Image 1 (cartoon, rainbow, N blue to C red):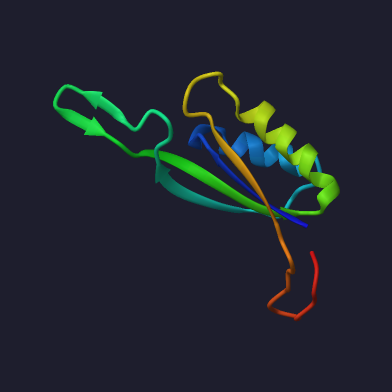
Image 2 (image 1 turned 135 degrees about the vertical axis):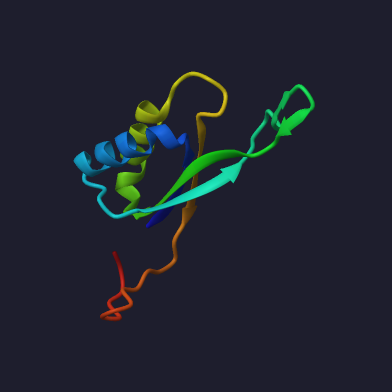
Length: 105
């Protein structure tokens, strides 16, 4: 199992969620976050904006679904402009359902 964390533009979150569902990835957590990347913010006159609104999608998927999920997020979320986001993938050792105690996805 892998954890995918995708930090994306807010205006792309619904389209990405829909495309992931079509690809069979239906479970995810969506968080509204703020951050900055390589630009280190934006200066407009005397005002400096150093954090921008983003959405972070969190999902745990089987190893064989990782490439498809990354492809969907990349293709649907890409505008070609700085600030499109990042995708992070890490291993998940275990997962448990709180209600039942069942192990696995």
